[in-house]
Length: 433
Image (cartoon, rainbow, N blue to C red):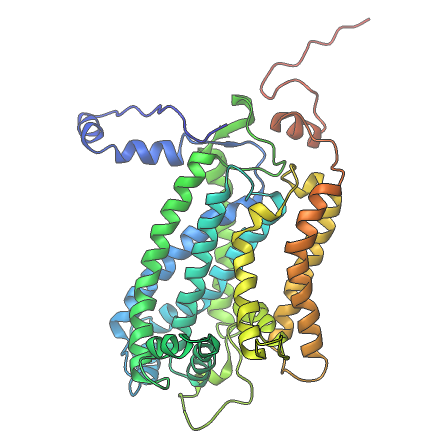
């Protein structure tokens, strides 16, 4: 059942009718966020779309204010950030909201993505919805990387040096791309100017793609934990108040946790070396990216050997970018007709193994590339690829799914131990015999 519904909006005032006839924005908002029908069985895993929208707005607002006080100059940047912390009214709060907010943005997006993988939200007719989500994720990664460079601490400088250095591994055009990115032959003032400009611009691009993402969602319709399409009006409830109340409660819980980190442990997810001003002549003992990049960083470092004519550096870059490309083609790798892992026992098992593998890669990414860690990274990277390229296609062909309910309403009634009559219908009268 498509998300496209006949509008039930009725303007109640003369001004409302005048605006509706010329630019029906209130009608669009009403149809999208009040009367829009959503499956009646959505759980709290589906609240992270709203949480992400909230975090995006918070990041943009705090970022705009921080930009008013930031100096995008390699000689001034570090001290301007310290000045924000000490001299700007509530500057410390804005800075911690923004820096910690980046981590919480990624926590929410990873849960959102894993939910999509678990419930098969990428399957037809929602392939474009999934691809738009992956584009948002890529833009988030670029924005976060460039933002991490702006404080101009040791980890900012050397992280930029290492990450931009990967592009030099690309044959023919690699050096040109690297020099274009950093504005010269080494990370310096032109790099900071470029990254500041792009870090300011990209969140508005993200907001644009988010609008397309929501549009695609409303055209294809919301998925649900059963993976069964909406078949009747009884399978749905209006977005407000049902989904808005649940989303609102989840946002409050999320913000409480977010606030705890801001006020009590704001640097827990950061790196101490970034409180030391960037020094091109002193390399930190370990150069590690932010935690949300660590699984991909581990995959990059897993390739410590040449593969034919491909050297280890280029091999690592290709494998790392390949691991992100795989996410874009998931809808075509999964051959199962059943969407949700709830009815796919083997897929459910391999899904949780995959989650453990990603967590392990994140842990390895923070470790030095010595001892057993490169071997574990290679095993983790191999399993990552095996999951998408072998397990997903093969499982869809050989797995026997569990019996699925005939409708969302039936699934809700079975879960709640109810009878088989439709929700909202009167129960059959009891007769004494």
